[in-house]
Length: 193
Image (cartoon, rainbow, N blue to C red; front, side, top):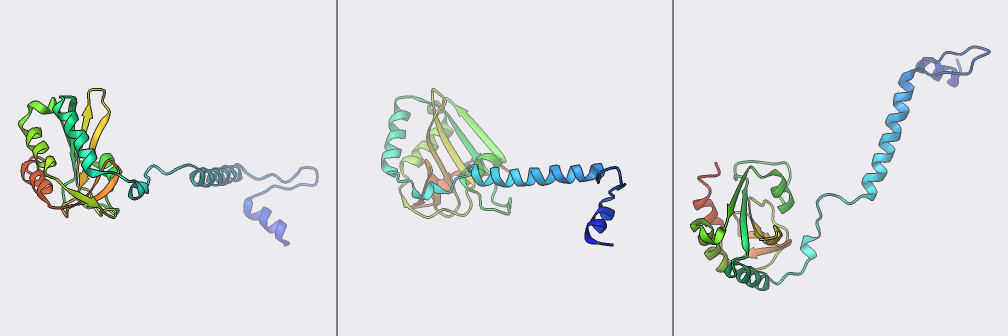
């Protein structure tokens, strides 16, 4: 049996002298699958990924961002504060970037009119004392705090781990102390379990 005849036999082709070679329906499925795989490979190579890794390259003046938040806070223009968390005992096969924390958070607390709430007042007091310097990307973000203005636009976003590393408005930093992390763990940790 030659190679062509062997392939026809394997594919279940029917041949006669008056009819062309016909393959059963399952070959149609294979053709469609091959088409989809080729197109998916092309589209995924051309389209941007959902999570960007260029946050390290952004330049951000930490003190200027914090001063802007303070001004917006004091003017009463912060409409809500959102606090998200994934407990330290929860493990993932990948590092938790700010984007992943946003998508996979297990706990989310939204505080409306935060200037009037003791919890967010204490949080703001801790944030005012934070100092940081540029850093490489941290391993595992476990906390995220975002301040939103009256239009619903994020004004200030901070993400951090338990090792004094974090990101502020998309730029990675190393904090001078772990006071913010300890405050979050002691104040909100018992609630978020």
